[in-house]
Length: 193
Image 1 (cartoon, rainbow, N blue to C red):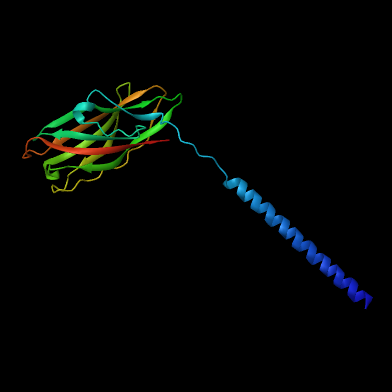
Image 2: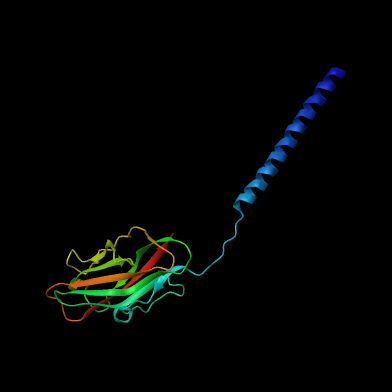
């Protein structure tokens, strides 16, 4: 009888020890999980942002966001069978002390009362301070000839050094039989790494 009690006490102690160890391990894991998930997020002024360029008023650059992360070019014009160029429709500047990567990205395009079928393309290019042209792939087009815009693909990222300003060149083209004074509005975003 005594041997049965001793064995039962040892089993009870072992089970109690295992349950206590499991409880301690679970509590430790919960504290560790909580520490990993804890973080602080703050907002700051955008170092890389849109600013006015030499042709901003002509291009209708009016819809700047408060922090310059997107802009609306509200009056980009196109004339029949003519390529119209805005050398500095808007600029991108880096007011920070380090190098950043940035790109232009599609937000929206609207044509108001102008029929999309009058347009051939609207192309955005980035011009670095040294005159190098980048991003010929950021183009809205009307290749089907109907009232449908082909959305501009998101461009690659480019490095902008501290205190640099890049120009955003916009080129519009209307088809030969387009009505006079066709205008569209494009809103573009600035993605920054």
